[in-house]
Image: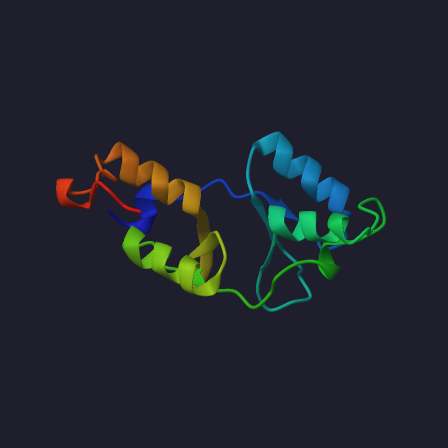
Length: 138
């Protein structure tokens, strides 16, 4: 199965000038774990995730004053729509993140999350059953 089959083509975007609370509210309303940050003054997109929001709040920063621009990731790994879901999952595990912006011909076409990949695998009949000889793990 390829990324294009599991990705969401509807991508939440936010402005770097939005507050963390505004970003969190938009993410919660749309039930997504990340928003793509589009800044016309930057060469490419960034991303702000649940983890970024939690880290800022956990550090005692004010979500009504802190701006997305100060908490986004801009050094991103992008996926192509023809990548396999396994390749996307491997990139996420290797990079320590849970979302990939999908780019085709230089244009953003979607976003794929680890949740999307698991959903596809489960609906495709993937199983996590262990062989019977591995049943007793101590």
